[in-house]
Amino acid sequence: MSFLSNLFGGANTAAADQTQAMLAAIGAGQQGAQTADQQLAAATQQGVAPLQQNLTTANQGVTGLGNALGLNGPAGNQSALAQLETTPGYQFSLGQGNNQINAAGAANGTLNSGNQLTALANYGSGLAQQNYGNYVSQLQPYLGASNQAAQGIAGMYQNLGNQQAGVQNNLTNTEISALTGAGNANANAALANQNQAQSLLGGAGKAIGGLLGTPTSSALNPTYGTSLLTGLGSLFTGSDERIKDDIEPVGELYDGQQIYRYRYKGEDRTNIGLMAQDVENLFPDAVREFSGYKAVNYKDATDFAAQLGGLLEAA
Image (cartoon, rainbow, N blue to C red; front, side, top):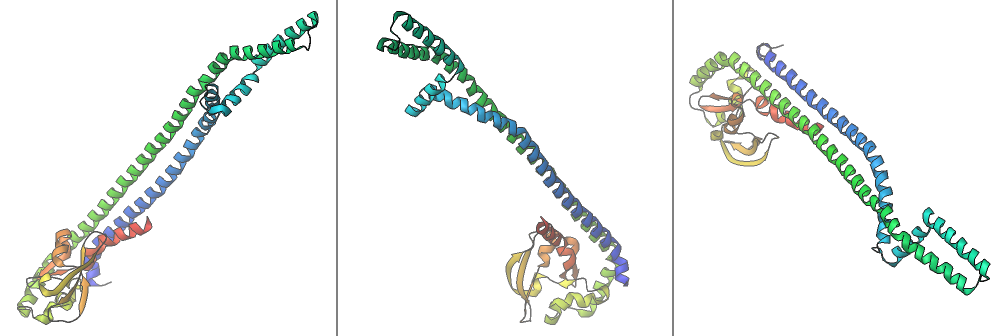
């Protein structure tokens, strides 16, 4: 293990371990939320099943009531009459009345005559009219039962939605807390590294700046930062907007940092990367200044974006 690894590795390792723990917590939270959603849905279906059966039965009575009230056209009227004539009370009264008419016909010698058949038909019609009101009254409770069952089903699903929303809200809070913790861990690690290296980098920057003087075109390229820090593990890359030409935005990282296309002054090659001034606004600990120009530690500048990218891919 190198001197710099020993010097800076402890804080970075701790931050990495904490970040992995946070991401594991997010994964466990997502799995728990999925399991909770499935259990809530299953419990809701069990509760809805008897209500759905009640609703189906009640709707049959509602349809019969609509037929009896003439709301469903001629076919509904015929169905209502057929249903009325099959009710036990109607059939019993009809049988009793017909027996009396037949007995009277037999007694007075008019059995099977036209008058007797007319009497039978009139009695059946009158009996149907008498029983109509009772039939409608018997069907009316189905209307209330249908509404009650429908409201019960709606309430079950509304409760399911509320519970699932609560699960998702808890998961979101867990993710926010974990990502915040991961960000704080990396920020603390960067700060620890900064404090650890402050005396070393400060002295080295001044000494080398005095030797180099004003940067030339060859000093304003990626090797500018690394040449200053060759002995420090090449942590930083020259990325000051003042040492670049033809700067154009071409995209952004997961955390919103802008990615640019540019050329270093005095060079023809096109490069892709970040701008030190932008990085400094979000991650000031990832930026150092050497001889008046800013350089970027790309690992520290992109760690959080990489973590967000991994989280989105795993989701």
